[in-house]
Amino acid sequence: MRKLKGALIGCGFFAVNQMHGWRDLPEVEMVAICDRDPERLSIVGDEFAVDRRYQSAEAMFFDGGFDFVDIATTVGSHRALVELAVRHKVPAICQKPFAPTLEDAKAMVAAAEVAGIPLMIHENFRWQTPILAVKAVLDSGAIGEPFWGRVSFRSGFDVFSGQPYLARGKRFIIEDLGIHSLDIARFLFGDASRMTARTRRINPDIAGEDVATMLLDHDSGVTSIVDVSYATKLPEEPFPETFVEIDASRGTLRLGKDYRLTVHGPDGTRENRVAPTLLPWASRPWHNIQESVALIQKHWVERLAAGREPDTSGRDNLKTFALVEAAYLSAERGETVDLGDLLG
Ligand code: NAD
Ligand code: 89V
Image 1: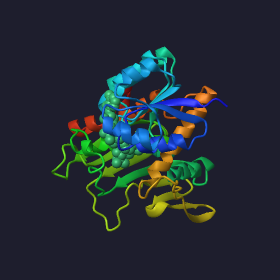
Image 2: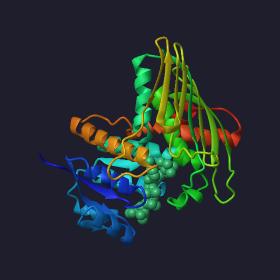
Image 3: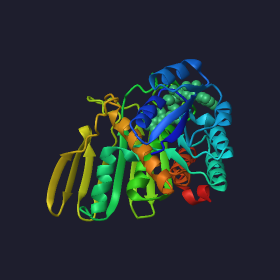
Image 4: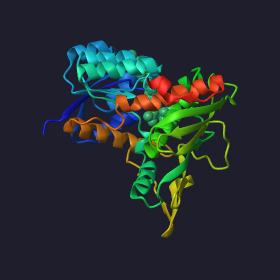
C-alpha cells in the first residue's frame, strides 16, 4: 500500500498532538514540516524523525512531494496558507479558528472549491468520545425529540502559560473555545438561525472576553444555551470537560463531571462513564482533546480515500464560524442576530 504523504505547517504547542496522531495512522507518513522558528522545527523534526524541514511554506510547496498539508499555525496566517495550498492544488486541513473574519473564511472555501481541493477545518471537539456518546443516545431515539439543550464549559484552568497568545487577542473565549462548544451545539441540535449573546472580561490581565453566555434558536426547534468561562473557580477543576444537558420529549440526558452520562427515559435510568481513552502519548487532563485529534485525522484519511467531503469541511465550518461572528455582534449591539444576514 502506498502511504499518504503529509506535510505540516506550524510546529508549535498543539501541533505535537497532531504529529502523534499522524504517526499512529499506518496509512500516513509525514514527509515534511515547516515553521518560521528554527527551534520548533528542530524539536518536532527530531521527535518525529522528519528530515525535510523548511522555514518557509512557499519553499516547502515549491519542492512538493506530499498529498496533503496540515496547517497548525495560529489564525492570522490561515488564509494565506490555505490559499498557498490551493494554488498548489494540495488538499488542506486548517486548524480552528478558521480565519480572522467570516469574509476570509468564505473566500478560503470559495478558492478551495474552484480549485477542487478538499478543505477540512480541524474542529475536533465533536470527535471527543463523550460527545460522540451523547450524539449516539440522541440518534437512538431513546429520549425522543430534544427541545432544549445546554453545552457548558466552565473552568479556571490556566490556558495562558501554554498558549500565551490567548491573553493578547481582542477576542478570546468565544473565538478560541466557544467555537468548539458552538460546533458541538450544531452537531447535536442542527444548524441555528438566531443568536443572542452576552460577554464579560473577569481576568484583568488579558485583552479579550473570558466569559460568554449564548442563546441559540436551532432550525430543529431546539433552544440551546452555550456557556463558556475561564473565570470559574470550582472546588474540582473540570478542564477540559464539556458538560451537556438535554431535555427531550421522552426523557433527559446529562453529561457531567468525570464523563458521567445519565440517560433517563421510559425504560428507566441508565448511568455510565463515557471516558476517553488515554492514548500512549497523551497526558491528563488533555487526553480527551488528544484522542479527538487522532479521531478527526483518521476521519480525514478515510474521507480523502473515499473522495467524500469531511464532516467538518470548510463549507460546514462556515456555519460554526458564523455563530462566532454572530455572538460577538450580538454582545456588542445588545441585540439578537439573524444568522441568515451573515451567511447570505
Ligand atoms: P503556537 O503559537 O504554539 O504554534 C504556532 C506555530 O506556527 C509557531 O511555532 C509559529 O512559529 C508557527 N508559524 C506561524 N505562522 C507561520 C507561518 N506563516 N509559516 C510557518 N510557521 C508559522 O500555537 P498553538 O497553540 O500550537 O496553536 C496553533 C493553532 O491550533 C491555533 O489556531 C489554535 O487555536 C489551535 N489549537 C487547537 C486546539 C484544538 O483542540 N483544536 C487546541 C489548541 C490550539
Ligand atoms: O482547544 C483549544 O482550542 C484550546 C483550549 C482548549 C486551551 O481552549 O485553545
